[in-house]
Image 1: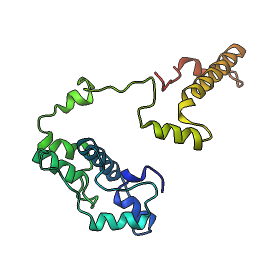
Image 2 (image 1 turned 60 degrees about the vertical axis):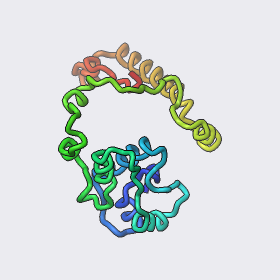
Image 3 (image 1 turned 30 degrees about the horizontal axis):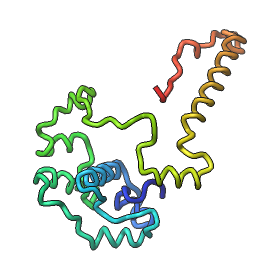
Image 4 (image 1 turned 30 degrees about the vertical axis):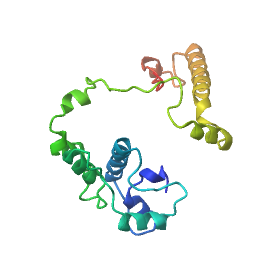
Length: 192
C-alpha cells in the first residue's frame, strides 16, 4: 500500500486487508472528492492521518457520516457525495460522468481541456507550496530532500547534456554503420 493515506479510497484499504482483488481509476476520483471537500470546508471529510491504522480507517468509512455544510449549493453537495461514494461502482469515475452531473452543466469543458480558462490562483514556482513544517520534516528525515531536487535535476540534466554532446561529437554514425537517429529528436525537459 502506497500513497497519501488521507486521500486513499476505501477500496485501497480493503485490498490491503485482502478483502478485495484490486482497484482501478475510481480511486483517483475519490481523491478528487477529498480535495474538493477539503478546499470547501478547510478540512478533510474523514480524520485520517498517516498514523491511523487500516482497521481504524475501515471503521471510519462504515460508521462515520460525512458532514456537508448547509451553506453549500445543493448541486455541489451532490457532486461531492458522488465523488465520495464508498462503492466505486456508484462513484463518479469518468470525465463523461462528471460532465453529465447537473452542477457541471455551466462548465465549458472544451475551453477547460484546451486550457483557455485562466485559473483564479497560480501558486508561486519559487518555493514549495505546502506547510513549512512538512519542509522541515522532510529536511530532517529524508536523505534527499525535495527542496534540493531542483539543484539535483539541474546537475543531472547538465551531465546528460555533456554525455549527449560527447556522443554526438564522437560519431554521427552508430556502431553498426547506420546514421544515429537520436540527433533528430528533441530531448524532453519536464522543468519547462
